[in-house]
Image (cartoon, rainbow, N blue to C red; front, side):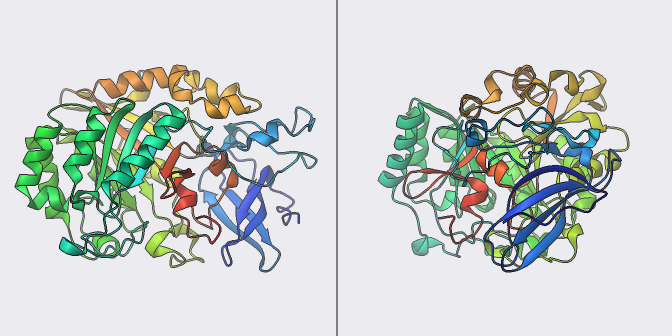
Length: 468
């Protein structure tokens, strides 16, 4: 079945596979731009055989959308499209027709070979339950504390991680998640094992911060286990404002989050603030950055636009497309709210995975304030991974650009200089309204599933019947 055509005046950027927002079955989709204006919105129209065509916005500004194709079979299927329709990764706002998947190009059923792709982050759920009943939990974790904690047995956790190490040779970042991972009864046994296990480079603790804020003995033990380096806290943090907190977490938890941050400071444990961005919190991006800048051990903020997965599955408003926030909304909001501290050129896609999956920028700390990175660095001159790749081969997908691209080398230096830099990351996950199979096919953020196999984060938490 072919997707419904884009409006005649629109510029078609590519064809892909999306999901029907009603029944969630895979549906052919076309990505199109509303006009040749560089900052025009980018739209997606997918066509379901049962529910017809549905169109919505996937980027508010084409300057922050990149046309790319992900499935390695597109590079090995024997097609011979001409130079006007080969799959590329390119900025959509240029008005160029390149990047369109030709009508005669093959599309194969998607079955992304996650085991052969580079894994930048491997996430594992070590606890299924949580100590907070957040209305917006992406994992839909049930409430459970004390003797009701539903923890994965430690031998099973180690076995699943060992399997990934055996197959892939190493894990750059192992993210401990849940549920609430700090509830695991053998939490420190796991940390000591992971710290000693060759092949695990870095640990990321994904937490709501409750135990950090309220359990001084836990914090002290954490400091003794990781006295310096190789671990960071990824703290759920929804901003310093009151708006949006109750809708996201069921209560105003700002004091608790501040206490958790201060506890990490006492043991010199670095923190990244993870902000879920909604329509209510969108106007408070920069105040969150300013809050982070006041704490030397806070290394940056990751902004995650709200998606309809987990507990919010199917509950986000479908008709108000402003509720589907995207990378452009976050970038433009930050630039506008910063009043000159940030510029549009301070942000670039990461050189791994799909360019629409993670956008990053840095502030440079200076005496009396911060400077815009674009005062010193032109990202466009370092984006060889976007300009030069005309076809993505299987080898390209298997090898992460984080260890081979000029931009990646610069980002690595910035990460090492934590005293002078502050990271701004935008990580947009997908639901049925924003689903682009090409992004799944090039995902490098993987979940270690209960059966030990790797899966794309967005696919695993999508709630689709065929996803688990």
